[in-house]
Amino acid sequence: MKGFPAIQLLAYTLIALPVLFSACVKDNCKKEHTYVYYQPVFKTKNEVRANIKSNAPRAIETPGKICILGPTIFLNEPDRGIHIIDNTNPARPRNIAFVDIPGNMDIAIKGNILYADLFTDLVALDISNPADVKVKKIVEGVFPYRVYGNGFVQANNQDHIITEWVRRDTTVTESCSEGDVIVFFDSNVFLASSASGGTASPVGKGGSMARFTIMNNRLYTVGTDDLDVFNITNAADPVHGNRVSVGWNIETIYPFKNNLFIGSQTGMFIYNVTNPDVPVQAGQFSHVRSCDPVIADDNYAYVTLRSGNVCQGFTNELDIVKLNNLSNPALQKVYPLTNPHGLSKDGDLLFICDGKDGLKVYNAANVMSLQLISTIGTIDAYDVIAMDHIALTVAKDGLYQYDYSDPVNIRLLSKLTVAPK
Image 1 (tube, rainbow, N blue to C red):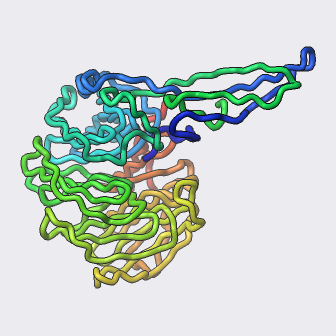
Image 2 (cartoon, rainbow, N blue to C red; image 1 turned 180 degrees about the vertical axis):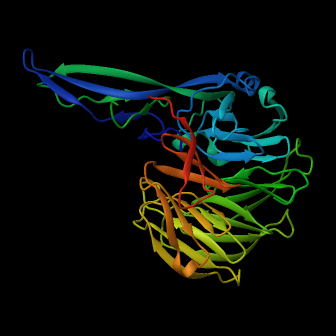
Image 3 (cartoon, rainbow, N blue to C red; image 1 turned 30 degrees about the horizontal axis):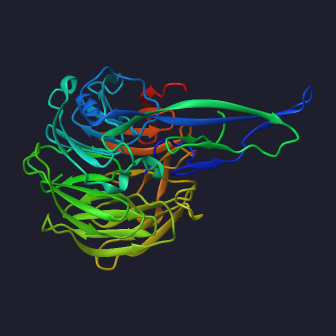
């Protein structure tokens, strides 16, 4: 799981860190070594839980995953919480509240209940009044892989939770005649890499990068290698049930009819949930090692593969997989792309977030011959939800909304801008 994308973690416990920057001062021949690191701020569990509520709105700093329910957008701020945005008028969205949830990466919604992760715990929130969000239940310890973001292990403060990271700078001066300095930090420090559907209640629409999804009165979540099932027949009282081992490097989950399409770095898994408490693998499609969000319709699965530090590999493409035989899904067509991330489909329109190449819109009526209709190349796109002629798009610099009533002439409706750092 990612915490702060700009931070590169170099150790877990006591660490010796090499010199990052040095400058020899000629007058007295001294070396100066400057380090930038991030130190965690802790609060008690009781303090954290008391603050899981509607607080004053905050500027968006790092837009994450999204979920839409009616006229409201819920936008995750990775590891910090959830922005609540009134989207009654998509041309003028209003950031109305922020719910502080340290360690939050994913969200899903059934009716008036929103589900979110708080590091290792699942939190159920009453969102019937966005201005007065309340905790209904916390299920502890159901996401053990989340311990803390980026592999950080904090073993001695089990009753405390990291709520934020504070940047610290330090400079060490030594004689030029001495060797390179080694600076020791304790385990509470990270070094920066530089000095700079299916239920009676309405279900929120999530993006393709989601690890949470809802179907048949169940909340399904994926971790690094497991699929967890929560019974949410009583939405405010989620009950953890089955846990199924899926594979390694699991990334995303997408529901369609009675199947769950699970993306991993090595392939796509299809799980049938006719028995909602006992997911059964129905099929698998393997591919080269890459990051792998997936969506599906009646006939095909659409899988984007991308390279990158986390994903490894060198493949950047869209794979279209035929689903007429779920036990043996077959690759139908491959389209090269630049660095594809999330995707969405509305009828015959296929939307793909192609990283720095922007948001691309295709006519997908014939999957063997996709036709590029429009490209919005001015954004670095991460994920998109296309519905009701509006494409809600998460990009590095903000949350965009586009009117695609005329897909040849897509119009920007609004943008919520990321705050400068």
